Image 1: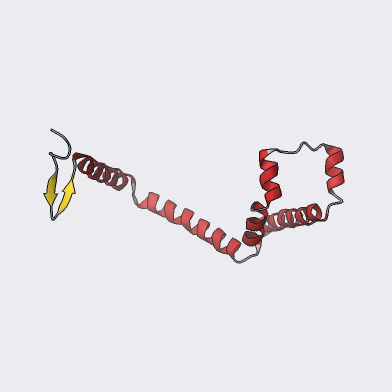
Image 2: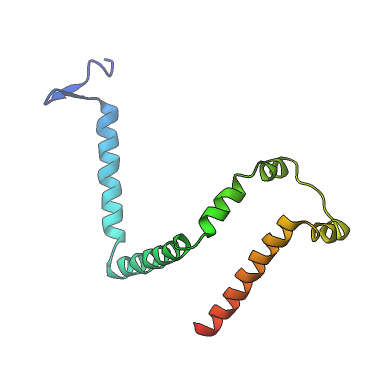
Length: 122
């Protein structure tokens, strides 16, 4: 007997044994989730989601996302990811003359300083 011969028709929808097994898997998963979720777990998930949404909102209210997106789409970055350049101390010092490097380092330093200032407030 093939799966085609073993299908049932309910409201014009053919349900195969594979479909029935998938539905049973969903019901079993719902049971596991129901047994796992309690008040403490729900509060923990809510706190986590609240924090994630606060961070997301903060990041979205700055230009950081746009700058990061443009930086990650830079073809030079793609090339460097495929063939990473080897840079020593001398190469690092040479990079300090590059304007893009200077701007990137400036942003990173300001980010680090802001994180340091935030530890005093929190």
